[in-house]
Length: 236
Image (tube, rainbow, N blue to C red; front, side):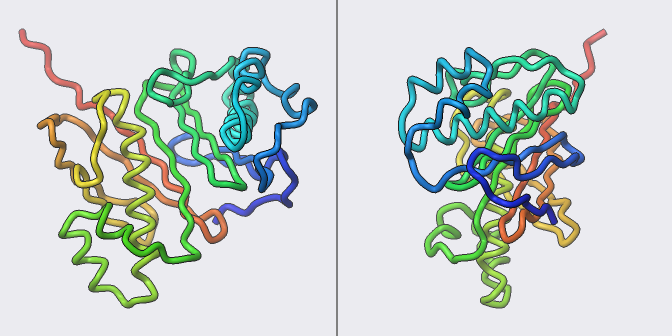
């Protein structure tokens, strides 16, 4: 269980080392008002310039995510670099660093690790059912497994699968560079938080290893996924 420090807008919520990298959370305000100048001043100048082009919750979430990333570079002994956004909407991290960002209205979370691309994270709420999500994001065999559970466990199980799938798509995107549908993977949650993944990639792509995990941030599920391509032998 990851516990949050007392909430204050743009204050650190947690920093924790997890198997896939170092994660940090930053509290966000519950409104889309412009980010205060003293908060913008905490960003790298390039990030601050970009943030000033944004408005509403887009600005709030961008700033929160970059503040979280800014806490992580020193944790890995790295010089703080600006992290803007690549053409696909993901954080544009420096070479040799993998990372991902997720946010809800009141919390932004970032994770980074040394290494090649293939890291994804996602945060989902579990305290209220969202009718219709299961039928939209689950494959038939997953839906059957969820429906076999007691009613009080169905949404929690669905939320874990949903979150892990979102993390998988972020982790896979650098390799596939295309939209990935919910039906292209099946997720089988485990009580120990180490989840099994089956791939059914629509483009016939293969050769990936998935390491999927989920954790609890109080009542929310945080998933992290590392995707690695299988090294293929070089013809002799």
